[in-house]
Image (tube, rainbow, N blue to C red; front, side, top):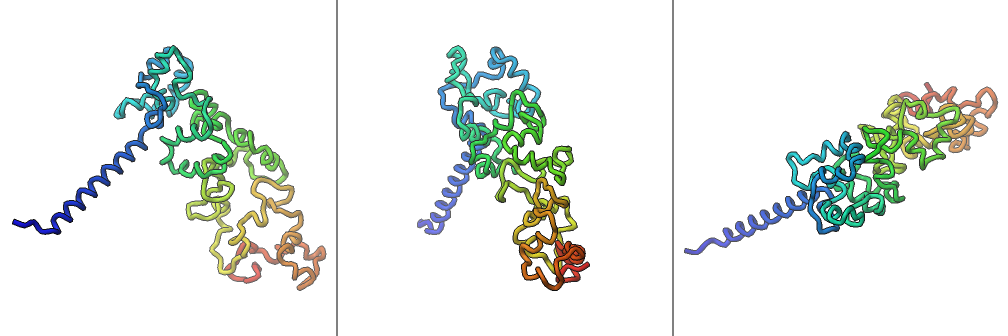
Length: 305
């Protein structure tokens, strides 16, 4: 009896699909495991946290109460998910070598990219962290342990080495000066934080800026009345954004404007109105006295009230 050719085609297709599914599952399983197992670099076995704390009792006490220790318990996971060895790798060679530091992964000895790779093996699927590899922080050698400490965090919630905004000011000292200007966002007062506007782990936008839930500029998260949509839009807002007229951190000018006088700012784009329809005298020195809906209007193409 001759078997129809299409049956062979179906069987071969089914085998290919099964092979692809198995390969995908194996890849996902590998990603799900900590980098300590995927790339230990040593011919070693896992020895368990109890062996680690024999010599590193202080470090164990520090990490025991953190989220890392709670997550990396061996319950329901393989042996590679032991607390200390989840990050530092299998420890048998280190133990057998009498504490030889070269036979275990020590974060203080590693280059930033190796540290990032180790941490991201668990954190890469977190929406907050998924753009870190393309972030300006990563490109400049700022790695996870630059801001976080698994053992001695000053802020336990995020395992931060310092409280915000002092942590950000460690590198961004020029921004700290902006927050001391007369008109500023109240970061130093604790009303908002750097991470409210920036995702320190990276975004697809410049300056690692966030967007609001509607995928608009993060400014609209607080200043929703400026968002619109408007029948008549002020074009710079759509093309350049809020920073076309405002400085985001702090300014010597009211409303965080980039210029001391409103007219000076407006005339940077509207030079043809320098003498018309009215002179720039004291009476009409503030364009927004008449053009009050400067962010956009539903009734006036020249943004009259």
